[in-house]
Length: 207
Image (cartoon, rainbow, N blue to C red):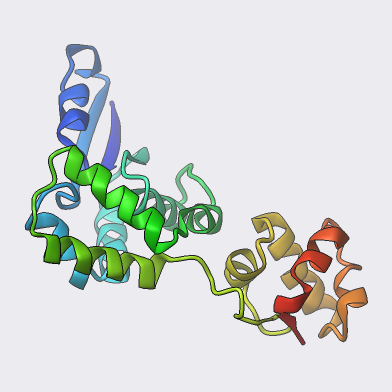
């Protein structure tokens, strides 16, 4: 029987996974709080994602699981990807997921409105606090933010310069082998990095 960890399940997830055709084939283990109703969603304001991931990683190194899924497009997707990587399970590249999740305050507002339309409860003040938190911590990188390509880790290159995870890894590997970059021309020498992409974000690059 396959054991599947389900993060931040919604009511319809639990309903789907309880269908008879899954019995005897899958065991679904649910973790995470309710992101769609108050006061559960207010926990986002003090949620320590790193402690949460580490706790799950410790638990499921002892308890076998075969996969991790989440129907939550923000926190669930990121946490599932990171946890799968920690446990050596199939999953998306966390850096790609994080890059895809950056939203403006307006976009986060739309997400919260959708949550309310689906039944999330909470005062306008509660929702405003959640939107502010999400936009501050999970908003798009500022256009004015500079990325030092000689010190940045791959995740910073993905988030700050919109490089693909593979391109970011190539930049870090090239730098480790050949030393620091002196200019844009040197950066463009990295195999697999699109020179046009570098030119497009050159105002955000520093050495």
